[in-house]
Image 1 (cartoon, rainbow, N blue to C red):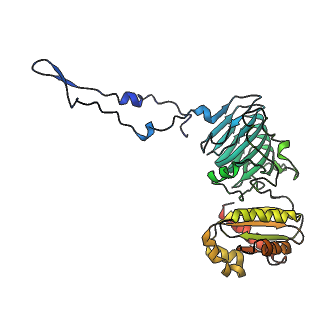
Image 2 (cartoon, helix red, strand yellow):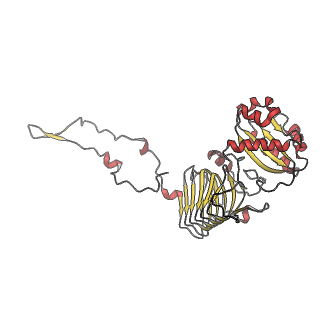
Image 3 (spheres, rainbow, N blue to C red):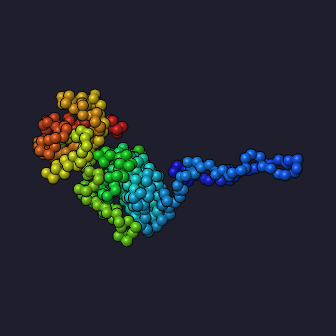
Length: 371
């Protein structure tokens, strides 16, 4: 894919280069006789690149469109790169995973981008509303964007103004598989931790969307008459593949609790079950992380409880959640004993030390992920 947009080589085609030639000599009887064994015709050799499926660059681009609903259905990109450029007043839906996506010179568009293994880069865009999941998110020379984001690293804006961010909230049946194919964890989302590469003194180039913001008020569902009518989407936060977190917004309570699941067959399902149980009781999910730990990390983060946990970190990454609200520590301890009695977990022991638990773990996780 990296060579889609390069100029065609002026060299002869493979077919021309492989065209067989014969050399002849004149015998004493003046009959022309080809050199070599000419009794059988050998089939031309086939190489691996001859067997590759032909790729049309146009299948991986949307260019110069206006007032239309367009995009790609599942299995159409399959991890390739994608380009969107010079589109105006369009609804664009990419219901697939991809390698990288660049969006250039677009105006007044609504965009959904399925999980991107690498970077999503908006350049010279204006009045964009979008839902994006990616490893890296960056904008340059953009104005007035509203983004519902899931980003594994710290999002970066550069020479951009009027940027607003909210937490990714989306579902369609293939989305969980697309996250896995893109190598993204649904629990690593730094949507509110924005880095402004070009800050202006006395001004704020970005802010967070209101907490009650609904995705469909910004990026509508596909037109039922469009090619995407078969995609069963939902923007209900309770169904979202990525957990809805409070992020960098001010916490409602001074009491938080750290709840950690150690790797096992149902770790992801257990974490989602905890979220349902806790939010059903009125508590708020602040942040989540999925990271690998070493024995020395366990001792530093969990301190007095480390001896009972070291053996469990060899089984795979841990999933940690910060829950917030008055009485949350006691409630989480009850949930752990009643719902997850057969599962290895760590739960803050009391509200006097729970804030320290939260800070110790998430500071470690941020360092581990280079944030």
